Structure formats: structure tokens, C-alpha cells
Amino acid sequence: MKKLKLKELESCLQQVDTFESPKLLLEQYPTRPHIAACMLYTIHNTFDDIENKTIADLGCGCGMLSIGSAMLGAGFCVGFDIDAEALEIFNSNLEDFELTNVDFIQCDVCSLSDSMSETFDTVIMNPPFGTKHNKGMDMIFLKRALQMAKTAVYSLHKTSTRQVKLQYDLPASYKFHKKKSVDIEVDFIRFLPKNS
Image (cartoon, rainbow, N blue to C red; front, side, top):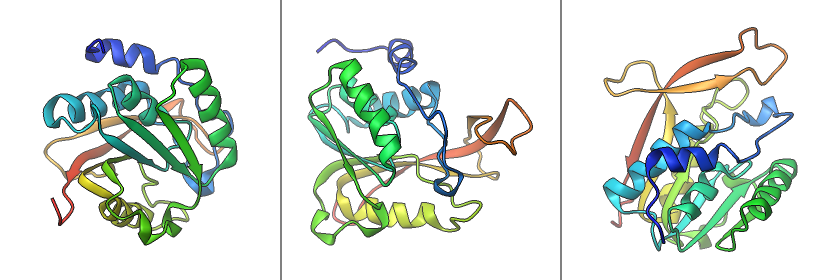
């Protein structure tokens, strides 16, 4: 498999279709191609946690992180999301990219069975940040991710007080958004399960 450079990965991810009508209650904000490429490139090149690994993408939405993982040589990737409409877009993206090592499951991540413990090498996610009506949702996702991962969990979390910051370009997605886009500061964190 050809090694992708960061800019090549980002360019490919710009072709991933995202939400046309995101759902506020689910905090559906697509992971932008730039941030997804930076996350995945770091996971792959710094920690070697993608190539030939089994990957879970929690709250996968339209599949940005799953598709990027597959492009970097994931052995198999499974996206998990509650929203059937998002998964329809995910499926369409898979067909467009002709990926066979990616699948998805419609489910509530919060209700995943304990039988999924240590099923995946790596878990990646851009969980709901737990604002609006979902306070603490990011921590629920993180708890589930730590149960599912054998090696590591990579996640974005909203912050305003960290020394290392990423700017998450949040486009206007809902009617109440007044600006075309807003930069939200987030932390990109690598968590290790107790067993690793």
C-alpha cells in the first residue's frame, strides 16, 4: 500500500460527503477533512495504531474517520452510530471510495454490550462534546471506548485551557448559527486502557 502524505490524505478526505441536515440533539458536527487528516496521520505515523489494526469509530456519522483509517491501511474498521440517515451517507461514501475493509453498525454507543470489550485494537472518535442537551456524553463515549480498545483510544474533547490546542473549524450547521464558521478549541487526546 502506498504511504499517503498528510496533504494527500486531507485531499482524499475532502471528497467524503457529510451531513446536509445535521441533528442538533445528536450534536452532529462533521469532522472536517483537515482535522481528520491531522488526527489520523498522527495516530498512524507517531503511534502505529492504524495500519493492519482493527479500528472502531464511535459516533462515526458519515464515516470521515473510518474512511481515512481505511486509506491508511487499517485491517478492518467498524463505524458505530445511532443515526440511520448519517449511516446512509456513510454507505454512499463507502461505495464511492470502493472500500471493502470498512463496515458500520447502527446502534446507540451508550448501550453497546460489554461483550464488545477489547474487541478492537484502536478506537477513534469525535464524540458529542456534551453541550446543549447531552451533558457528559463525551465521557460516556470515552468510557465505552476504553472498554472496547485493546491498545489505545484517540478522541477530541472541547477545551479552553490547554497548552496544546487544535482549532476545530465548526461550520454553520443549524439555523441558530449566526456566523459562517467558528473555531472551537479542542484537545486531541490518546488514552490507554488499563489492560495495555
